[in-house]
Image (cartoon, rainbow, N blue to C red; front, side, top):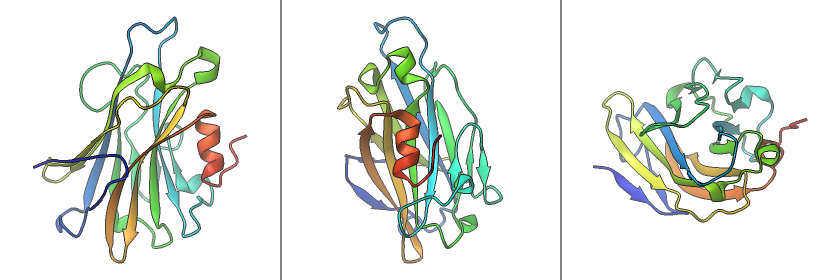
Length: 193
């Protein structure tokens, strides 16, 4: 049975689901039909964060040009450039046992590619969601529908997975940024230039 979360809510992942070893983070969205001109290209990313809340380098950043880190501990499914169709538009796979002990938190984000150039923002995106699925059973464990709280933002921290002792937990974040991927990278300690 899927648990629906609201912004800010936290939930145990591995403690209440002891067989959960391989998770799929599915992200999906629609773009409003009345928006102008150019197609939207939304991109999911994962930032693997140290105890200080920062990534240490490209090895801690998973996105369409760096699809896998730490021998597949976190892996991106690849860039979906149009977001058409139902279901997950992009997926990030997590193998909990492969995540190095130095990683304390994983930030899952979505950005709009070339948002400023195309005059696009998350106010023009609807039905955005994240869900977590047990890869081995196919069961959806949780879902967080982001709602339509955004206007000028070009990047969103959708959720975070974080260590709590030997277990992993999930937090529904839903925090928007202006400045796109560059702003997120800077927030997480990477130089996006």
